[in-house]
Image 1 (cartoon, each protein chain N blue to C red):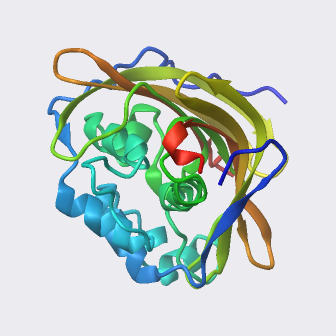
Image 2 (image 1 turned 180 degrees about the vertical axis):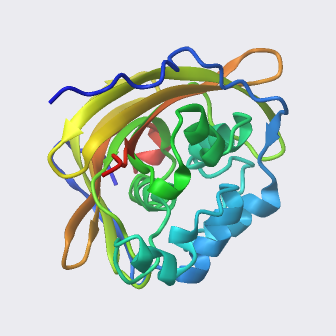
Length: 139
Length: 147
């Protein structure tokens, strides 16, 4: 897509966040925190009934949305807040909106609002991103 | 509300002792776990900004909490992340990790009671010192006050 300020980015949707995926992310992160692995621990801590997805995995959905919506782009910067949890089985959707486009030699730089929302509950990540798009990526 | 001072940890070094390398196989597994294809040009998924610095900093999450005199069983929560890239991350490339704790600020929260906001910065560079990225993470450490 040609980047235009005000345009929405194509959403990236996960129909059901996988508890098995959280086991894989525990290994990627070298972090065996049981709130991601054992619903009994989540319940004992009063945090709900289902395992909680790792925050960086939630952020990876947002980054993947940017990569898919703006092919050929590279991420310059990202600034996000984690405002809620994603639980096993949740449906989530990453989305965004271009807020400014700055042309430069060889391409353009896009400032975007980005978010991840859990179906039925609202935002779980909010923030901003700046991506660099080469001319070949703007067709 | 008078709060006791938090542990004085600003400036604590988070320099990794071993280089961190993103394996192509792990990058492929990570991409599969979120339903995307790995890049064909040798670049890694950008979320490795977080993984490479966090794993490579020479402290586990539990260890970092311990530095702040906080028990990980009390449930640290990620509050925010920032990153600025100087160049894309690549699989098979060794990276050096450095950084330090910026601050540990104690606050009274209506929801959580006494809590600390932990902010730390981590920098990734090539072995020759060329900067790759800088990231700042903020965690909330809810302090259990003995009753």
